[in-house]
Image (cartoon, rainbow, N blue to C red; front, side, top):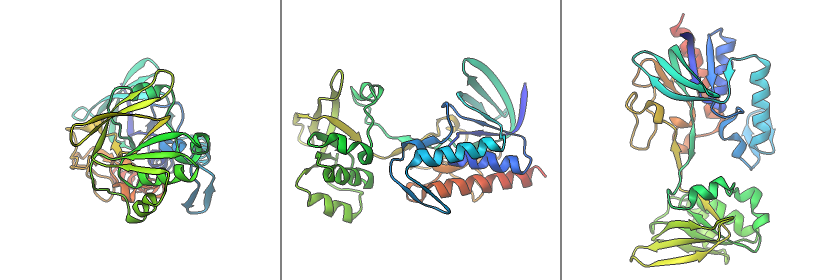
Length: 307
């Protein structure tokens, strides 16, 4: 059985930073990323990145390329297309599927940098929509949807901001929320209510998404039990994020918000497992900078533990 001192799961900014610092500090490490490229959610960021010190990027893809080139130039130990199937914390092993080859690897410490993903509605037709590639960005896809009708589902900042961006691009928007209260900032709510091409529907749930080759309509259910159908050309699901913590459920403490509970250096309730990045960071504090910082701090702390 192969042994690695520190296994890092996840190749987003946090995992990349942890691997870079492990390399710099001489720590035997391995970063496991299930996708075929590093970067995590960076590739989904369509807006400018103007708040990362010393760096400007037109979008997430630009900074992803910079990060990937950096980690490659340092010859960090990374394995792409590697899906972690399970973690045995008692034996300190992970079982990995590396392009069809199953391997069990022993570790001293595990760093979970698995990030978060978009929370989904879980209704009929949603997975078919996503498989067709109908997963849009308001910023980049808004102009393509001009004069069309779309549904934006959610009641937080991302839902309202997306609705406003789409409306400004000439899109007819239905903002659909399951309750009467919103989590979005008052500025977003006030601005959205002033847009003539934004219709806000409260106490309403999307129960199905229809269309064989593309989205054509959605089914709705309101609080009175009344059902209806709304013809739309696209659906933007903006109902929050879900932390990718399934691998360590029952192995570490996870709070009511789904966040892994950590100390200042990423320690979890399990002495062998650390967590960094979005999997343990509240949304309000989540950023590329905070994830990179957490990766560095945890790697340095692990170096001190290993002497």
